[in-house]
Image 1 (spheres, each protein chain N blue to C red):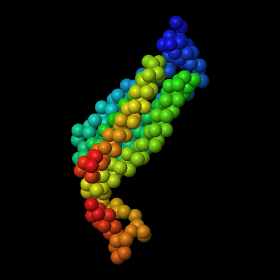
Image 2: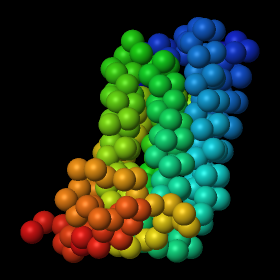
Image 3: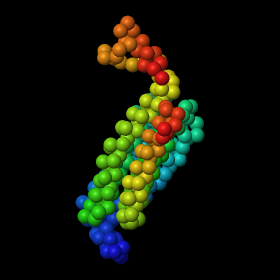
Image 4: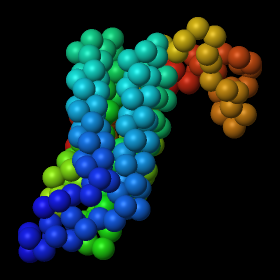
Length: 138
Length: 97
């Protein structure tokens, strides 16, 4: 089975090889962008903005390269499931971490407040001070 | 056997991507060690998990061993579960009440 898999994998045509090269380069670019954003952004919310989008796109692009490479076999479908799973779970995890950071009291940058919430109960008289009201509900 | 030229190019690009992703993971560990707050460290660990998913997928192509695709999927699942667990532990105080 291993010899058959190797023989099937070694017959990757030029179109498939070009697609794998292209997707790998795109994924590496997005990984670099996400890492630079994680290292350089000033706040945990801004860092999450970099990692939860750019790094997820990079990893999904590389997993898509694995899908292209292995597609007649079952491993290509598993790589496709990895892509779907990354796109489902990365926003969920980033949302939960940002919620946890906001409840821990990690401050925003200067001049950044919550947008006005018209459906909130305790936002009657408060005009621009919803940040304190939303931060203090712990 | 005599490889065509595009397979050699693909090997080169895949190995360069592997080395790049490994170096980026080392750079991300700076944010793990010196994150000012706990959510910074959690975000950096999540990023390390995503990078290792990419490394496993790249290694699955480069070494022509399809089992590492499964390694990548399981690492994605474990990274998501650990992120959710740490977020719940930070907010709620315990994980399973």
